[in-house]
Image 1 (spheres, rainbow, N blue to C red):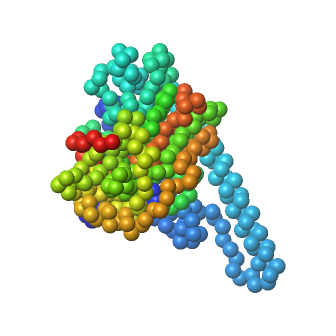
Image 2: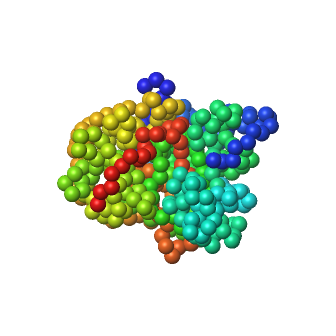
Image 3: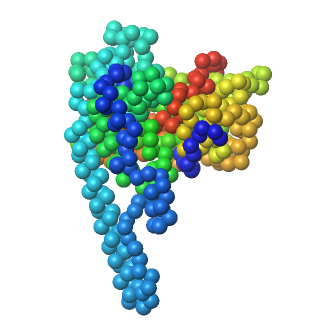
Length: 408
């Protein structure tokens, strides 16, 4: 497909300001010195069967059993030493990340716009993409400047911002470039899978969050990429992830009808189904309906983005970069159901939930696919870092559920 970069991937604003021209050079090669290129990763995998070059070589000229045993022990020892060095580097990077966490970088004005409207703090029209319902900052957050959220990244969230401002990242991001590069490097070392590394080599965005009592929700889908969360040491924050249903990537049944789970928030469950005319349509349900859904099958050929032109707009199920949404395919609702029936799911997963709570670690999950939330009773006031990616370089209008029908 023209204009699309592809790698295999089976699983799955900042403040705007123009700065001095001498900062522009930072944007062209922000990670080349720290993150191996795709070509070098491929060479490493060819030599060693892994995305990480261990520097280990095996002497194949030894033929005696004793020599073979000695060679094997040497390889094992070298691998252990290599893993120990990597672990130590990750720990050093995590320490730097905690030290460099932008202490004055939280957007307190944005926080006030996301508080409960009944508290009298907010403009009811300023919801920051429905984050008010999802992040659920408590009212007492208004009294403490330590609470809030802030976005930054190695690239702007949308490509048109890069064109408009003439930079690949905002001024705040450029001021904290090393902080971002350390995050990128720590994730790279923590997750040696070549598929994960390919999917996280560019378009990284970071949300800094302190104090949010995050409700159950799914994230916006902007590509087949994972999310990561880092919890600062010394805290008890827990993130709970629901494994069923799989949003955007499965078909479920409810009261005899088939649906594609599309979006979830504390206010509603949104699914794509068939209307009376046989066309795909958005249906909204009470959030509790999620417990009554039954599995039908998983989607392997594509990921459902939303409804467009009375059909289903899809994205590849592997990592791919799309500079425009015009390169995304469109299929029929029947095609989606057929793909799901080729990969049937017979029962719901057991256990239903996973917990991410270990501190000083880069936890991986898929926020656009799985409902996730803060676990009440654990520390919501700790500093945490959420990492996500935007390989689909513009907002996908088809994913918005503008017209819908309520069902129960």
